Length: 324
Ligand SMILES: Cc1cc2nc3c(=O)[nH]c(=O)nc-3n(C[C@H](O)[C@H](O)[C@H](O)COP(=O)(O)O)c2cc1C
Image 1: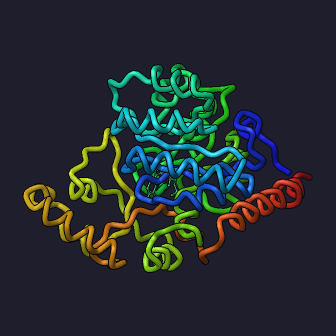
Image 2: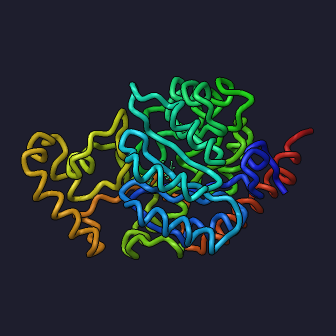
């Protein structure tokens, strides 16, 4: 069994976490990851107060193990945050503050409600800032990942952040999807991994089956960093691009972002309809380069168990066998 400082800090069995994903409303997925011994987190971006309350209730009915509620700080809604704290989740998972936003009040309020705090960052300055503000675990997210990412790759970012915030535990995110990734992250000094894309292609994920199939079919080379999905959604992200699948929608607007701004409302309506229909050409779909490692849709618990078992085999058999 692999035990790390992350496991100790948050009281979880395995050093594997599900990243909160605001566009993926899936209390059963969160609970399945936690029940399997990882740390599930529910993306609260886009949810209302009542949905946050009922989701927290549903997750705690499905598992007694730790789980998190995730907030994008630059978009945080006070009433939703209050509802989350009142639900007393074991973990609050923050990401993406504005540069001028004070972090301490949010972290102190989470601690005051009995929660541990994880904080996702995409650069070392962000990691220091979150550590100084009192975060318990830092998530170093590299640009290979799905969704909104920064400019540094995980392999360099992880050890840089580990050194900068020691002795705080660091999870490595972005580009990891299997036991090899967990073993590599541990070798880089991280205390575990956080997955988004791998769990998007799980049985419990509510993603349209066409989109899950696109992840399984991907060789990892079909994504790009773009602002086009955000422009269509009328969102200005504080310092991030979105890693999304290259498709007809993205190619139509690439280099013509000004025109997309002019036609934003029609574009958004088209995107929403395409999402519901599972239209791979017209719906932006965010996933990471690690899609190239994902061969099948699996139950979340099996993903957690397989990742941990494969990493254990690598650490106990393959790597020690290289030492002469
Ligand atoms: C569709 C999608 C939505 C995401 N939404 C959020 C979010 O709301 N909050 C957050 O902290 N991270 C979000 N992320 C980032 C993930 O938590 C995680 O950092 C990332 O997926 C890791 O890279 P991977 O996809 O290669 O595993 C999202 C990622 C994806 C793919």
